[in-house]
Length: 348
Image (cartoon, rainbow, N blue to C red):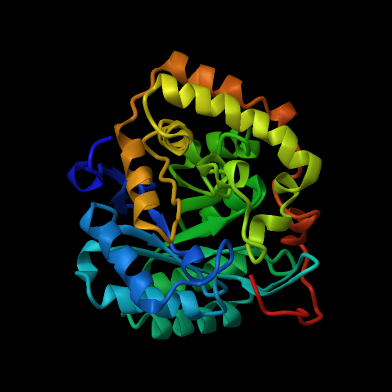
């Protein structure tokens, strides 16, 4: 495998509003826990700097990650990097998360502004390149939420607006108020719900696509298959990683592992390369806490796949054979509810 530091990470346009980013981004969420134990500030800053030095300039965080600590960590790292060369994305909208799964979602104009001001302070920056509504609050017309985001753009506090996990109708209505630059959705070989309607809509409107969890929440990295997950990991109780579901899904991993040998790459690289090959407007944001995994992810850019290869890889992961929901129970649908009761726990 080529050294990650010697791989040229391409630059691409994300959406048609002028934002240019590295073709591969970096999801910072895991640096403050969720998938594993949080890393130290020193280690977190180190991996962000290493990613930048290897060509990644697009970094993704959110106010809810680590209950604000993720933004603080990212902000510290940015102080050691040239800000003008970084594309910084963060999010607002999830006011609380509790387990069993429930979300408190807010999208009022006042909340939008207060979240933006707080994120700017935690990140210690003058502006946010890409500001996403993390989840949509359907008790507030999307036009009102977008109206406030438009004001923040006009004030120079944010440069571009994004949505995450939004419905087609919401995307259209939001885009009519102010152009949406990027849509962040879960997209990987075993989570492909957005391919039927949302991807074509984004391309119709000129909206870039930012897949989160492009490695199936790490599944295609193999640890859940060949080792065991830490008990404190977010995915240790995920529907696709438990009991019979995991045993069934191991067959999918094994097929991908065989194909990876054919392509002379790691299984994770083949799975990520498949996402990267879905279009020039697709910028996945895998995250990791380890330099070796970062290098593997960057190495996926060297994996070249033709149309027949892509069909063969897709065929190795039949969606009707993927066992378990893509997220916890009804959590995906809870984003469309506004919980008036405070969360039992403040953890992601």
